[in-house]
Structures are given as C-alpha cells and as structure tokens.
Length: 111
Length: 115
Image (cartoon, rainbow over all chains, first blue to last red; front, side, top):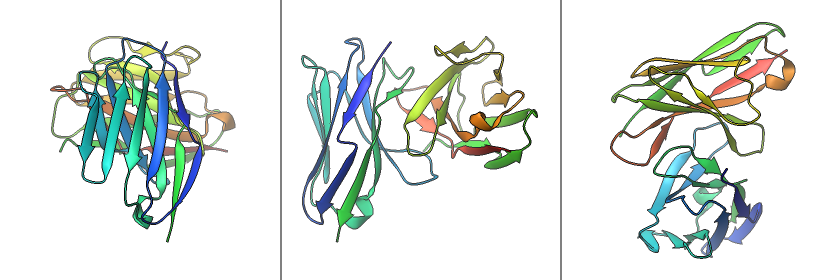
C-alpha cells in the first residue's frame, strides 16, 4: 500500500517568512495530492491540491510543487501570518480514492 | 460547497458498550465514504472505505467485527464501535468522496471517550 512521509514534524518561522513542508510517497500510481490544514479538534480543511499532470499550482500565498519522478511534493507558504499556525497534512491518493496521509507538520508562526 | 455532517460530535461511554456514529452528506449523493481515526497529535489513519449497497473495505489491521460499517443509502454511512474499550478512545472522522472529482469532504469529527 501507499506510504506517505512528511517532514519536518514541527516548524517555527517568523511572521513574514516562508514555510516549506515536504512529502514523499511510495506508490507511483498515486495521482492526486491534497494538502490540509487542521486546527485542534476541527476537521481538516483543504488548502490546495495538485494532480499528477501538473508540476506546480499556486493560490495566492500558497503553492504546491510535484516531482513525479522523485515521488515527492512540497507545500510552500509565503509571507506567513500568525493565523497560518496549525497542523498541516499532505496526502496521496489514486483518483480520489483512499487518502493516505502524512504524519503532519505543526507550524508555528511567531509574531 | 459540499457539506458532510457527523453525529454525535462527542460521546462518552462505559467500557463494553457499543457506540454508533453517523456520517451524512447533506447536499450531494455519496456512493463512497471513508472513515478515519485520529489519535491526539497524530495523523489521520484510514480505517475503511464504505461503499453504498455493498460491504465495506477495511484497511489492514482494522478489525471489521469491532468497527461495523453500514452504508445503507447514498447520504448516510454509520460506524459502530462494538464493545468499546479505553484504547478505542479517539477522534473519528468521516469523509465523502466528491462524485465529480477527486476531493473528499470531511465531517466535523466525533470525539469518543471510553471510560
């Protein structure tokens, strides 16, 4: 089955700096890679996703890059704000079927 | 956007009892729903895939006789934790697959505490 690894597990950045979270996956058949933000006790919220036919996608301060050959994808948050502080999860899926999540990154943005 | 609800949001029960959690898609039909479990400060772990009108598919290591899943309609899937024990205490989250794409819409989760 799919195995998704995520690094780092914790990340602290100064407000305004950039944050990068990286994930690798094992199943080359995976073709959908969403990123979620989760606040304590709440449901995961989709912040951006990418399909395998695209190498990069951007939405305002958030971008995701995908390297299919190396089987890794990354989340980039620029101009971080305190409200970006949360736990972020990557996931890998084949066509939106079972999601296999990474281990999570706890991001703290220091004002 | 698509809305998925879960009920109850929180439940406390005694060891040995069974607990049923409902997951509903409110504004779309979901032929496929998923159940996840999340322990404190851990990731979401897929437990099973719930298919309307057929038996659920369980992930390796998940006891199908302990975690009973029923997907009787296109808008409702239920997870029953049978003979719950303290180690079953966790945050259970369901999701419903977007019928038009790859996204999954998550419910708000159910916090189960077994005393």
